[in-house]
Image (cartoon, rainbow, N blue to C red; front, side, top):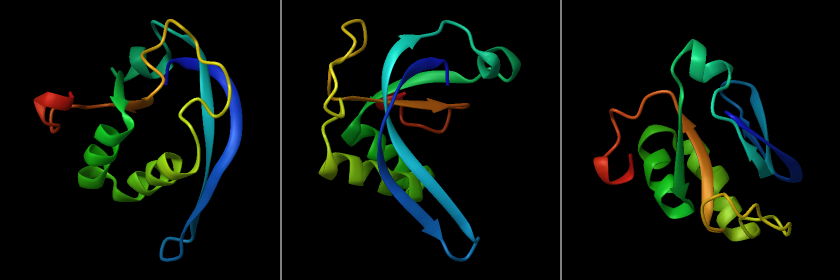
Length: 110
């Protein structure tokens, strides 16, 4: 998603019994933001920065299972995962999220 970073602790394992699918979610402390990356060049993917609360609201509408991941993040650890943050990033309460398309999102959080 156009960033490099340090992999943090396992946030949780989320299972979907119907689809027989298991997702492992880890915290990533971002150390570098890339201007261009493969998906930005090939499919026009854009980077969006959201406050955790705003990201949860967006995901509840579009990807409710992913909103669960962030609810657990909000309850279970600090956004920095106990690591020092990179000064050039948005503030410490910001979560990184990418979206290939933002046209369906409210303009207040696009």
